[in-house]
Length: 321
Ligand code: NAD
Figure 1 (cartoon, rainbow, N blue to C red):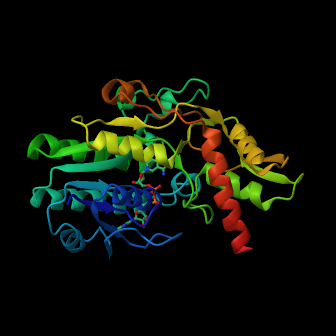
Figure 2: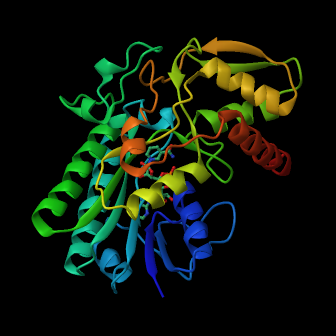
Figure 3: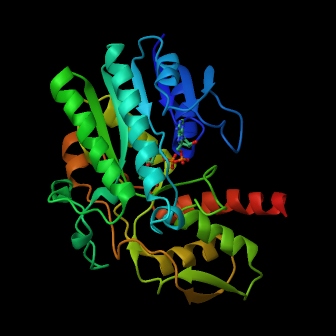
């Protein structure tokens, strides 16, 4: 029986990945500080532990796994990552997790390790124009991410690549661009824009106002979780290391994202612009390389995913009222 380890299995992408590879017939162990928030884990075995601790890593990696997925990180949406207040924690926590888990895998002679990097590694100077951001993979250097979260991701990419070069590991690296969907954080400050927008719309009476950070003209793209998992599995099982973007290239403004949430809800709301942490001005996934190397790229329209996510968040809002 094939075996997989999912680090960060209590989080959004990790818990969905556990479900997905269980369906493929894997024996799956999950590790996380916490169990999944919105449902039972599907993992055969779940270690509730801190991957900053090398002892926990050794416990988790007590056998040869065919595939290891590393999603554990100290992260959140713009309200957590871009204020500057959490930089030291983010770098310390995520840095230690990656250093520990990768070295433990090497000691166990595990080859295939997937690492989830981020579009936040791309230099700020290429993302000033909201209509024309450059996120081609090769544009990562000379490096100048706009957050320490991005710098840690870049450091860890290099760490995984060095283990690949020096120790013969078969690491696979994706740079995710804003993944969203049901069972993701939707309140509390660590939620991302699609979930925040769905929550604001779900909580507002028809005709009322919702708050938007900035002028709403900043652009982004958002990828639905199912397509993220598909790309991740294709990359992990390919013969190619990456790093490669896994994201949608359907770029929208935050205003358009808000409109989609309203459309899903059947509500018309006014937008009130307030100051808030914004991140870069524009960002979009460049999918030429993934298509060239894997013959695949995400294709589903954003509105499909927004409709599914809206319905789930609306239910959460109702059941928490
Ligand atoms: P998430 O916050 O839902 O999941 C991360 C999980 O890691 C959490 O469950 C958390 O408890 C766990 N974790 C944190 N510190 C830990 C520790 N010391 N020991 C054990 N577990 C620990 O985030 P997500 O959205 O599922 O993202 C997964 C990965 O993908 C992260 O590495 C993230 O940086 C990367 N990524 C995500 C996105 C996105 O849009 N979701 C975009 C770019 C990159």
